[in-house]
Image (tube, rainbow, N blue to C red; front, side):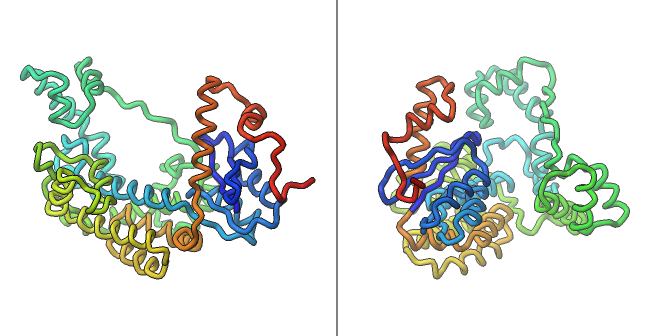
Length: 387
């Protein structure tokens, strides 16, 4: 039984023997080729536990086709939490940046356009709000409490007489926006078939995947299909939800954490926030119901209800939740094994934390060979290691 975990920033891959609770190897990089080659040399491996990284899934599929893949249960729940956070942020509920008006959010016709409004069109409004509050004699701390921004960010904004230009990273060939002008021209001329556009931009240097292109095209199709006077069908335009104890707006981070936490462990204040969120946000109420069902399935050790849960999640038509459920469906075998089998990737994650501690002790200057020497026990040998 092998647990595979990726070292942060793509610097390597850790292999752990789950039965013997011991580290067996540290690979030099985090690539499909190296992990696949390592697994291929050990044909008796029966189970590969891994995180949600697609590289490890592909490596296990190609290097150990005889093994059963097991997704990590902790990462499954964390991915659901991130989806909840994204959903609350996108649709204007419990957002830590409430200065953007509900009218501005409701006027957008797709997720991408809403994000652009939040990050571009609201910058002057944000600056004017900071300036007005400061002219009232409020301190940076009080402005931070009222607006949800960090005190340091507010101080940086108010050091200039106008909103600062955002530093934008240069587009690279893996993004379809790298060839946005060409795609827009093709779209205008009626060429809207994804596979045809993918072939055309490939010939012009695009190195990304077709799925990235399809996500962009989906936004363009939604923009044209939704009527200007109609709000998006899954748009929740109720007032922002506030904490019943303090009156402050509940952030999307807090809402996402409360969304996946069962009723029993909630404190009285947390329970009050959950009740307020459920009453004030239809989106939160739907997501919490799904989250409680998902937690129950994971803990039940039975995957019979998983397919029905995925179908119900997709039927909500909430963008982030639908995406999460679709990814589960693509990785359905590994997810069902995670629910039914006792194995998890906890040991690999623990070894990764140990490695990060050693790297900090050596000020990040350790190379692969030194890290392997410090991580691996003396005279170690995996049972399938070639002699």
